[in-house]
Image 1 (cartoon, rainbow, N blue to C red):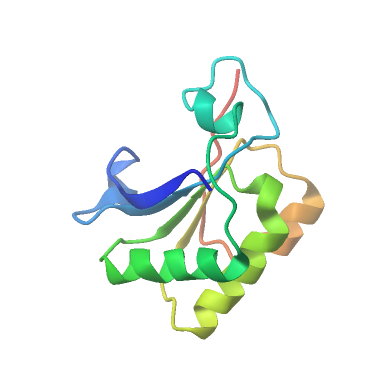
Image 2 (cartoon, helix red, strand yellow):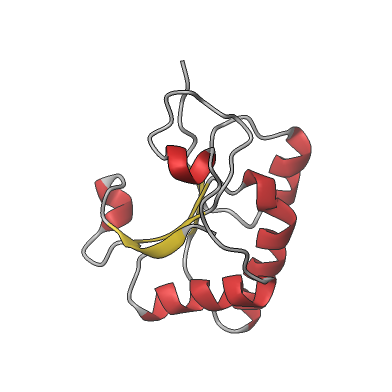
Amino acid sequence: MSSYGPHFGEENVLVGRAGSGTIFFTGCNLKCVFCQNWEISHLREGRTVSVEELAAVMLALEKAGCHNINLVTPTPYLPQILTALENAAQQGLNLPIVYNCGGYESPIALELLNGVVDIYMPDLKF
Protein backbone atom coordinates (compact mmCIF):
# COMPACT_ATOMS: atom_id res chain seq x y z
CA MET A 1 0.00 0.00 0.00
CA SER A 2 1.31 3.42 -0.88
CA SER A 3 -1.07 5.63 1.07
CA TYR A 4 -4.65 6.11 2.20
CA GLY A 5 -6.93 8.89 3.33
CA PRO A 6 -9.79 11.14 2.32
CA HIS A 7 -9.16 12.06 -1.32
CA PHE A 8 -10.73 15.06 -3.04
CA GLY A 9 -9.26 14.56 -6.52
CA GLU A 10 -11.86 12.11 -7.80
CA GLU A 11 -15.17 12.76 -9.54
CA ASN A 12 -17.40 15.05 -7.47
CA VAL A 13 -20.07 12.41 -6.99
CA LEU A 14 -17.52 10.23 -5.14
CA VAL A 15 -15.88 13.00 -3.14
CA GLY A 16 -18.92 14.62 -1.55
CA ARG A 17 -18.07 16.84 1.41
CA ALA A 18 -15.80 14.43 3.35
CA GLY A 19 -13.81 12.84 0.55
CA SER A 20 -13.48 9.44 -1.06
CA GLY A 21 -11.78 6.96 1.28
CA THR A 22 -8.96 6.19 -1.09
CA ILE A 23 -6.41 3.42 -0.70
CA PHE A 24 -3.55 3.62 -3.20
CA PHE A 25 -1.90 0.26 -3.90
CA THR A 26 1.63 -0.02 -5.26
CA GLY A 27 2.43 -1.73 -8.54
CA CYS A 28 0.22 -1.99 -11.58
CA ASN A 29 -0.39 -4.72 -14.10
CA LEU A 30 -0.47 -2.27 -17.05
CA LYS A 31 2.83 -0.32 -16.73
CA CYS A 32 1.61 2.63 -18.82
CA VAL A 33 4.47 4.99 -19.69
CA PHE A 34 2.16 8.00 -19.19
CA CYS A 35 1.03 7.04 -15.68
CA GLN A 36 0.35 10.00 -13.38
CA ASN A 37 1.31 7.87 -10.36
CA TRP A 38 4.70 6.68 -11.67
CA GLU A 39 6.36 6.31 -8.26
CA ILE A 40 3.51 4.17 -6.99
CA SER A 41 2.82 2.12 -10.12
CA HIS A 42 6.33 1.55 -11.49
CA LEU A 43 8.71 2.04 -8.57
CA ARG A 44 6.31 0.33 -6.16
CA GLU A 45 6.91 2.89 -3.42
CA GLY A 46 4.88 1.84 -0.43
CA ARG A 47 4.79 -0.67 2.38
CA THR A 48 3.54 -4.19 2.92
CA VAL A 49 0.42 -4.46 5.06
CA SER A 50 -1.42 -7.48 6.38
CA VAL A 51 -5.02 -8.28 5.52
CA GLU A 52 -5.94 -7.25 9.06
CA GLU A 53 -4.17 -3.90 8.67
CA LEU A 54 -5.95 -3.29 5.37
CA ALA A 55 -9.33 -4.02 6.99
CA ALA A 56 -8.43 -1.61 9.81
CA VAL A 57 -7.59 1.10 7.24
CA MET A 58 -11.00 0.65 5.62
CA LEU A 59 -12.73 0.97 8.98
CA ALA A 60 -10.64 4.06 9.85
CA LEU A 61 -11.67 5.71 6.58
CA GLU A 62 -15.31 5.05 7.38
CA LYS A 63 -14.85 6.44 10.90
CA ALA A 64 -13.23 9.55 9.38
CA GLY A 65 -16.49 10.20 7.50
CA CYS A 66 -15.41 9.18 3.99
CA HIS A 67 -18.28 8.43 1.64
CA ASN A 68 -16.84 5.23 0.14
CA ILE A 69 -13.82 2.94 0.04
CA ASN A 70 -11.94 3.70 -3.18
CA LEU A 71 -9.44 0.98 -4.12
CA VAL A 72 -6.90 2.42 -6.58
CA THR A 73 -4.95 -0.09 -8.72
CA PRO A 74 -6.31 -3.04 -6.74
CA THR A 75 -6.03 -5.82 -9.32
CA PRO A 76 -2.61 -7.25 -8.35
CA TYR A 77 -3.87 -7.68 -4.78
CA LEU A 78 -7.40 -8.92 -5.43
CA PRO A 79 -7.29 -12.05 -3.19
CA GLN A 80 -5.97 -10.09 -0.21
CA ILE A 81 -8.41 -7.23 -0.80
CA LEU A 82 -11.39 -9.59 -0.89
CA THR A 83 -10.31 -11.10 2.42
CA ALA A 84 -9.79 -7.65 3.95
CA LEU A 85 -13.22 -6.51 2.74
CA GLU A 86 -14.82 -9.57 4.30
CA ASN A 87 -13.00 -8.90 7.59
CA ALA A 88 -13.98 -5.22 7.55
CA ALA A 89 -17.62 -6.06 6.75
CA GLN A 90 -17.70 -8.46 9.71
CA GLN A 91 -16.52 -5.55 11.86
CA GLY A 92 -19.26 -3.24 10.57
CA LEU A 93 -17.91 -1.65 7.37
CA ASN A 94 -20.94 -0.28 5.55
CA LEU A 95 -19.68 1.91 2.72
CA PRO A 96 -19.90 1.53 -1.06
CA ILE A 97 -16.79 -0.04 -2.58
CA VAL A 98 -15.20 1.69 -5.59
CA TYR A 99 -12.97 -0.46 -7.83
CA ASN A 100 -10.68 2.12 -9.45
CA CYS A 101 -8.73 0.07 -11.98
CA GLY A 102 -7.10 0.02 -15.39
CA GLY A 103 -10.11 -1.66 -16.98
CA TYR A 104 -8.43 -4.88 -18.08
CA GLU A 105 -9.74 -7.23 -15.42
CA SER A 106 -10.23 -10.86 -16.35
CA PRO A 107 -13.69 -12.44 -16.40
CA ILE A 108 -12.62 -14.49 -13.37
CA ALA A 109 -11.68 -11.34 -11.44
CA LEU A 110 -15.00 -9.72 -12.35
CA GLU A 111 -16.83 -12.83 -11.17
CA LEU A 112 -15.05 -12.63 -7.82
CA LEU A 113 -15.99 -8.95 -7.50
CA ASN A 114 -19.65 -9.49 -8.37
CA GLY A 115 -21.78 -8.53 -5.38
CA VAL A 116 -18.78 -6.99 -3.59
CA VAL A 117 -18.03 -3.88 -5.64
CA ASP A 118 -20.64 -1.15 -5.91
CA ILE A 119 -18.92 1.17 -8.39
CA TYR A 120 -16.46 0.21 -11.13
CA MET A 121 -14.29 3.12 -12.18
CA PRO A 122 -11.89 1.99 -14.92
CA ASP A 123 -9.40 4.46 -16.34
CA LEU A 124 -9.85 4.35 -20.09
CA LYS A 125 -6.53 3.99 -21.91
CA PHE A 126 -5.77 5.03 -25.47
